[in-house]
Image (cartoon, rainbow, N blue to C red; front, side, top):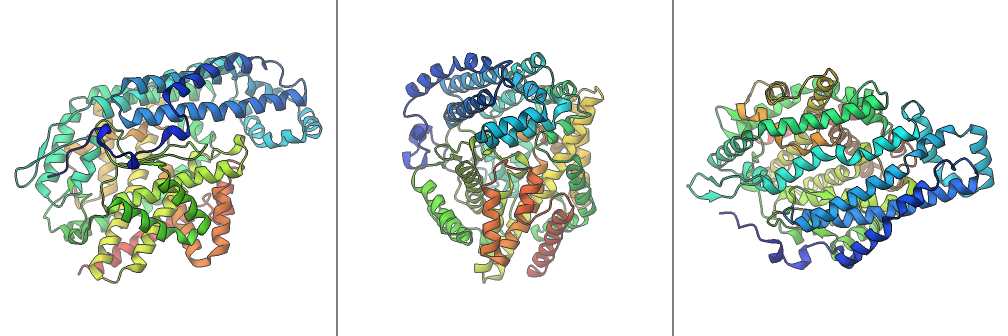
Amino acid sequence: MSKPIPKRSEVAAEFTWDLTDIFPSDEAWKSEYEALKPYAEAVAAYRGRLGESAETLLAYFRLDDELNVRVGRLYGYANCKADEDTSNSFYQDLRGKALSLSVALSGAGAFAASELLALRDETLARFYAEQPELTTYRRPIEQVRRRRAHILSPECEALLANAGEMADSPDAIFGVFHNADLRFPAVTDGAGAEQPLTDATFVPLLQSGDRTLRRNTFETYYATLGGYRNTLSATLDAQFKQLRFFANARRYPSTLDAALDATEVPVSVYDSLIESVHANLDKMYRYVALRRRLLGVDELHMYDVYTPIVPDVAEEIPFEQAKATVLDALTVLGTDYTAMLREGFDHRWLDVYPNVGKRGGAYSSGIARPHPYVLLNHTDDLDSQFTIAHEMGHAMHSYLSCKNQPVCTSDYVIFVAEVASTCNEVLLMRHLLNKSTDKRERAYLINHFLDQFKGTVYRQTMFAEFERELGRMAERGETLTADALDEKYLALNRLYFGPDMINDAQIALEWARIPHFYYNYYVFQYATGFSAAVALADRILREGERAVADYKRFLSGGSSTDPISLLKLAGVDMSTPAPVNAALAMFGELVDELDALTR
């Protein structure tokens, strides 16, 4: 029987993150919150003045940098505290206050884009000459001016900025519902024992070798979630309505164009990913057929897709062992990189174990001043070990970008956000495979990597295609009803898993448990990021120091140039389908190797 999930107060401090590095106490947070409230007036005082002199424009950007850092810390602390226990209303309130303040400050500075657009090229050139420090902000200025056709009047920009908090409501509602309010009955395993079912335990239970437990988990989870399908479809409908509103307001032809233009990624990259995956579905079908054979079942069901197909090799991997293995695997990135990792491990940058009310899943907070924070829900297995490598990849990316870039270009865009994390995972897998001498252990590791690949490239591309269709429906004025969502999701599931998979009716409702559908066309970047990561890891292992140096330039690049160009610096061209096709070819080769190893 699984161990009971502890209360937050029962978790040893050494396995919790130390947020006192951000604020020593809640009182210090409140003091900073009060100190920041008047800054909306300080920002607004620059309205109508950005073109008056180079000194004024520089002063505005310096103030903007200061507020980005201070508000980032304010929100970061509140967000992390709120995620420790999502039922704790005190920290939910702090997070809400921080978000409201951020929106207010954004609204106060909404005039800036219009005023930057109004500056003549000659005026800007003169400003740069008069105040050389202003060239630090050349990149963000160019990013605004590039989007000239989509910037509105100061009054309209202020209105859109002030609507930001309202626009975040669908995501907030979904998160609170899943993390704080949704409750599932216990499920029984093959021996008749009960196991607790939550959002956090759902996938681990589906990884069990007990097929009765997997089926009961699958059916109970979706039977419970199905009771709220109309509420959840209305929430998702609201999400795409707000995306459509902002896209229309900014004169974009679609919600997808609006989302990708913000990060300077061509829509052709999104469409090319889906086309490449469609052209390589035969490899996914071979994988599904292999899974069916190795599980020894007449029919492969959707509750069979997570369990390892070489289960007897699985071992318990305690947190300390997992950390040591990750450090060992990433030595190829240099002693400076592993020293930063040790710093995080030794000084409580991580919140390690599940507790009652804790947000599920894992993330790197994005806070990098004074250092990143990482949330885990570690369960002492191989998947959790890979999660450490993944999330610390995010953390190191944020840390290096903030260390090497000025504030205004230190935040990297979401297109490259999954590259460093996944590169760490690929390097860890290669490390484990290189150490493996046992045939069944190698088969187990390849199976795990294939499952990651399937989940990251094929599954996330399926999500991306679903999201693209939801955007098109919203743009046609159609309502995203539960029935319509079920129908479209089930059709895509059939396409992506192929003829050897039984498409259980319950899987049509999977859209209702995926938080990423509230992230504005985020998920495709898992697939592109994985493909880029495979290419980067190959180059690092093949070329050594030169490739590592190029990779670290990418990690340190922030948003100093567009994301496609950043990846080219590291040796990967995502403007072509080549990296995706190469990664999918590797998937097919690994399927064939696993097939041969298990004959």
